[in-house]
Image 1 (cartoon, rainbow, N blue to C red):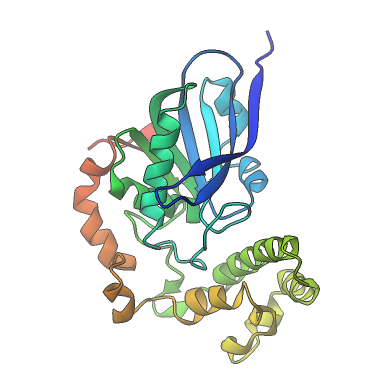
Image 2: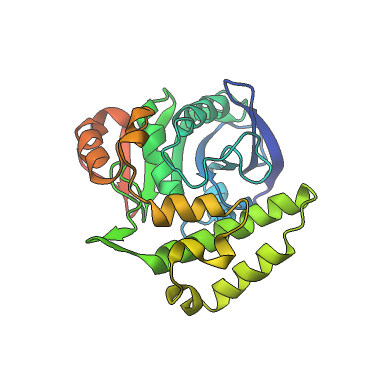
Length: 272
């Protein structure tokens, strides 16, 4: 018997401040209640469902609902994105509100787990710290550990290759959004695509702050915040945001047993 899948695109989820975030929902097409897997992402949602990290159709066939949500200010989700700052004060509350919203949907049995890698993995640590009642498991992969930001500083040296690829793709995502708003992004898109095809042109460009392809609205702040100033100073902490990098890992680590009942590594539960 063929498994039928219900797909709801661009579903609205209202946050506590009234901002509407958008998600695509994939679930078994039946009248039963199912546990749900949530992936929160700054990236284009279709890109996320085609990830090798987790096959959505396999998950739905196994009896799970799968939700892919764009975080605040990305693609068709409302609000303002903090230009690559995964520690934005709003990500924890937005994640909490999202978990509790879907836990109360008529097709959900109240059990929510999260999944995702890289940026999407870091978002899970931030969400877990909020301790939403219906969050039962997190499965972050290929990201900072225990709430640590993805570290692009290696023994004092910038991991330019990793940062460049990420910044280019986030810049292209912003170009898509700006184009839908009626803005001319042809020059920005051309330079970003060229940098993606020929990254050595950026590797050899000095000074880094003047790289032409990142001197545009919607990508300039990404380049500045994540490449030129990746480790935040006292001004960052004064805003009440979590400590960056290892300081946060150390402060969050001892509290992990209270953040989420289960954590998974390679599909297996990590003993606590």
